[in-house]
Length: 204
Image (cartoon, rainbow, N blue to C red; front, side):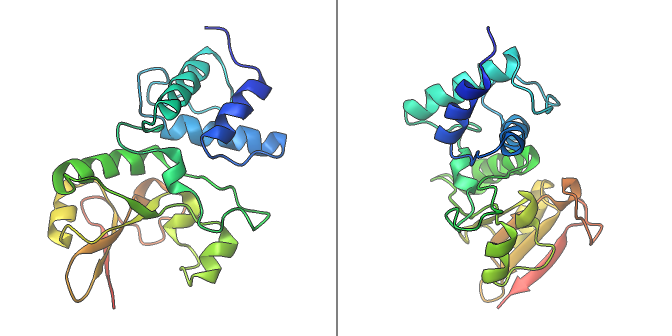
């Protein structure tokens, strides 16, 4: 398959929800797309280089086709747009979408086990300014595309048993999980947590 031009790839990435205003943002968007892509075998597991060659072109084409058909664009049940920063792009430094593939994989496992009716991401990526405005931690995993807030359905013990998350936050009054993250693969695992020994904390 002939590789897309930068203009063609930019059009698709923007349609998927990415913010692209500069060449640097274009490359960042391509890297995030590549790292999160789970729709098919086009990219394999480690093809994250920020370059739109034939493999990435095929993946972009598949994502765009499923978007137009009303389907998910990143994996079987999740779209890139679900992880968009809630600031709406009002902050200049916001990248709009950042999500790690390991988070998508873990969310698919969580959905399959405990969310038969579907799992909605209520908060994914947060830019620095938005994270500050909502009182997020200075090294919040949301900043790195490594975290998601979800509806309170599964209990802490159930989520921990999946062995996919290294950070789990739960509501104190219900014991049900409302935050999950994969800090073990993020750039800021300040707690040294693993999926076998995740960081656990309680929300009031």
